[in-house]
Length: 185
Image (cartoon, rainbow, N blue to C red; front, side, top):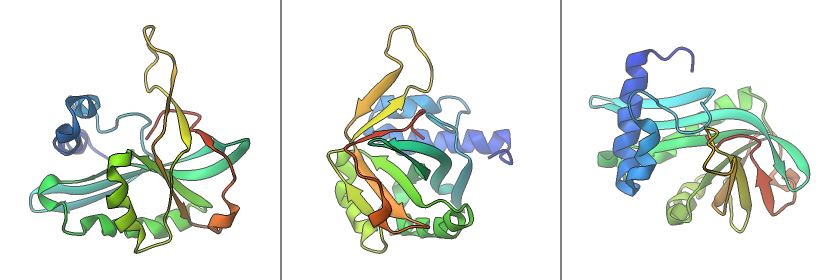
């Protein structure tokens, strides 16, 4: 993350505005100006480029989340996007390139969330690997910026994605709630 130059942040911010904007103006708002992250700042990024610029992006942040009553180390995956003109071409499967990095980081699991509207997309992606998609789990996150007009946390019911990296999925802790202990990536 610290290797990115300002011009790269500007290019990524534009990529996210164009990628997330069609899903609602509010979704593009965090990327105004040169900010290339929406909540927590990623630790690592996988960025795919082609002749037209940024083609796809995935961010990663190691953190402890609380699953039920258990603290669990994960690599949270987020800031996922594929440039709209490349959607449907299978570029999302190139995210498998993150697996060696996840193994190198020695995390037992990768974790992420997506809105329920992306269920079919995630299930297609999961057919090519050991991804588990779980619903009916409440996820609590802090807001990225403290505000006096809003509570400091929010609770959502997204789809939870779990990818075993260093341990089998049977070792994932039981629980119907997840506390991110920080803002969403």
